[in-house]
Length: 275
Image 1: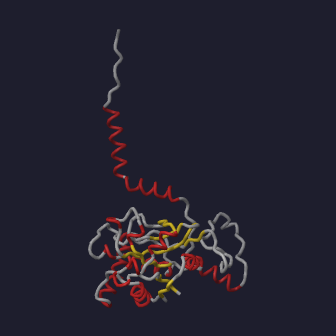
Image 2 (image 1 turned 90 degrees about the horizontal axis):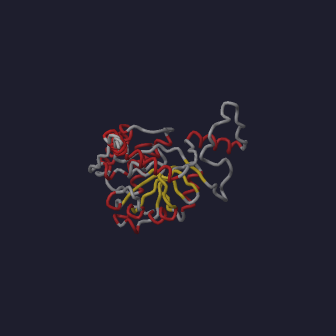
Image 3 (image 1 turned 60 degrees about the vertical axis):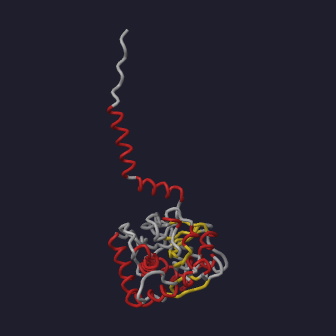
């Protein structure tokens, strides 16, 4: 009786090796895709131009124009068209361009402490009408510009308080940035609904972000740009997965603390907002 010839295993090994090699090479992209899938849908984002147009319609007390044939398929913007003084919509979102504080993954002495500069730059770009994805070069240019200003005027760029950060936003960017002490996350949501992204200082370790190293920084800043129910949509510059990163509302509220001379866990619940 003739024995059946076994199929050569070499091609199988080659295929398996190629698949594993490809998975390893694109492991970061795969992780990002999985994270986005688990995150769920993000509300459509409204640009600063959208905010101005909505406010102009509201001030003129006219209804928004009906869609034409040219925009019948346009996505709805991430801000409500109705008065939300007494209640909040289920979701809102602003088109804030993301900046990673270490764009080239070089966590040197400058970039490991550049969350304040990255957060301030993101809000500045929103009010300048910049949307879409930035290049690494554009991200770093914005960060280094802010760092240079701080070094000249503060003599340092590390651990700037909310007030110091608001000051350089006023003097460097010309924005009417101010520090506000808030009593609830609902106040922050109202600001987002009004079209104002919020810069939030935080006790970084209380954020419990799995992408942070060593449990996270003592002090951190990020941008709150929207929400979906009890999930807060942020641009967190401390991780390359920080664009549209979702935090639980209660967790984020507990982590909200200003620098407070280094005693961050006991710092006041201050935020930075542009008037």
